[in-house]
Length: 73
Image (tube, rainbow, N blue to C red; front, side, top):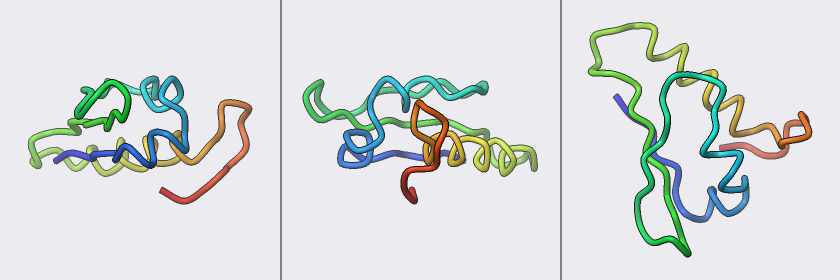
């Protein structure tokens, strides 16, 4: 199970914020340095907790670094 954040959304959210979720999966950068996408591996599909991790990740990505929800991912 994984989640990939495309280059357009990485740009909108901010690379620094998107790279540093407050949880275990650290993203792997895909694509180019000028238009990075991020790949978050959440598990092998056997652990139900991966859904909770995904919820925490999307909440983090929706929040701006200042703490307010900015947009839908």
